[in-house]
Amino acid sequence: MLVWPRLALLWLLPLGVAAEARSDGGFWLGDGSFRAHVAADAEGLREKYGPRFDPIRVDRVESGGVEFLGEEGLIDEFSSRWSPPPGYDGGFEGGFLKIGVGLLRRMRVTPYRFWDPYPVLLPATTELVERSALQAVFEQRLDAGRWRYLYRKKISVDSSGGRVEISYEFQNTGRERISFDQYNHNWLCMERGLPWVFATSLRPGIQWLRTARAVEGGMRFEKTPAAPLYFTAEQRDRPLLGWARCSDGRREVTVTALLPVSRLSIFVKDGFLAPEIFGVFRAESGESISWKRIYIFRTGLEGLPRKGKEQDQVFLPVLPSS
Image (cartoon, rainbow, N blue to C red; front, side, top):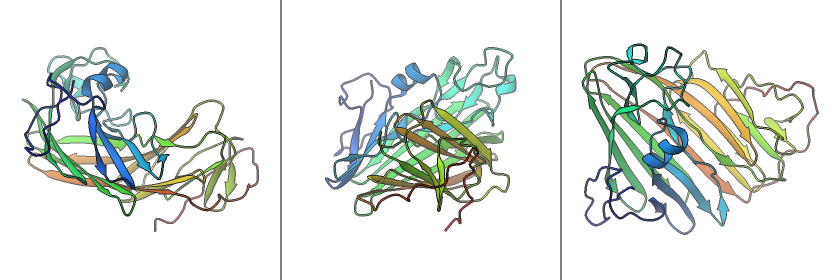
């Protein structure tokens, strides 16, 4: 069960302490025209997915009666299959670092697999340190001997612009270099039964086969694919900005990542599309690094591009970054 400090007092309370909590597990930022719900449920996420995710997330965004997010919403994860967690190679005894979770113990002689339920040796402590009607700031700390850090996450809402901004700051307070990648799952709703379009500034490297058609500026899905699809492409040039845009004619979401982009992955599931923009980072001892993700949510847009030409193998185009 989670505890949130009373707004008037702004106490510092560790997440996960047993006490009375709101049934929704969080609070809203914004106003009646546009609002975002901030949730934190470390134990619930761990039970469902294993020790993977940063528990602080935006799990709902609403505007004009339209819901924009599904599944777990805008949920962050550090150290993926392509960038094993720091210390994993020697993590049988002393443990390895999973930012957002804490110190975990390696269980077997296999490569890191994010879905494995690694035992948590020492959980990180997360606190709500600032909250207003439009902004919330959290700090997470871990002091595990070899691995020490301070991770700060700020969630801001601009109701008039339909904008949610997530700012990240990571400080390596230990003695060893910490290298990691980080991404947000970006679970975006796409209306069942409606065609929808996806576009990006990054190199997608995707073969959609016969599930979509090429249109000007991107790719149009006539209907939700019958089975989940997953595609991924490394970004070898490491651009410092990448964007992706999804629209179903009723809602449009533009995701912009201000970070050294290392990979774009796209997960398509019944009613949802998740464009995952990965960043790769390195923090030396005592160093602080920062990055940002910006979301623009819009409703009541014009119609989608008309049907494109069907192809056996279709590749998304590379679009300009501005």
